[in-house]
Image (cartoon, rainbow, N blue to C red; front, side, top):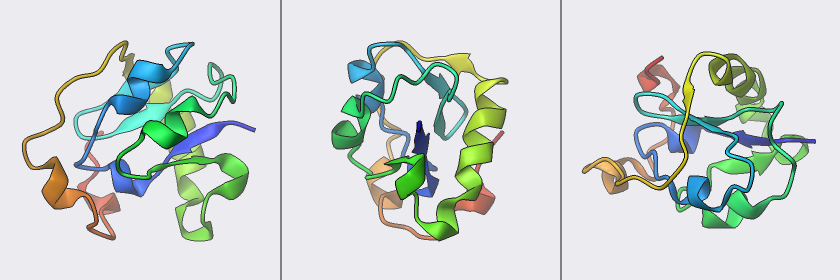
Length: 107
């Protein structure tokens, strides 16, 4: 099992989760974070820290979010690690509960 960042992170990109990760498995893109499945140690510390409720165990990911398992693995190979908390985008709270944001993901 590994943890997966899902759609609710898009355009929110809060980084509270990064701060608690003991193995630095988060990768940062322009408007989204992913978890490197090869680095994640399944500690679950990030889940409670995510203000967007965007992190799930891969087994618990809602069916409509299953594509994020492959997406996290793919983008983790392309994006650079993030090692600490950063300020969220200025409009992050406005995007927090917006649904169907996949088309807004910037690679």
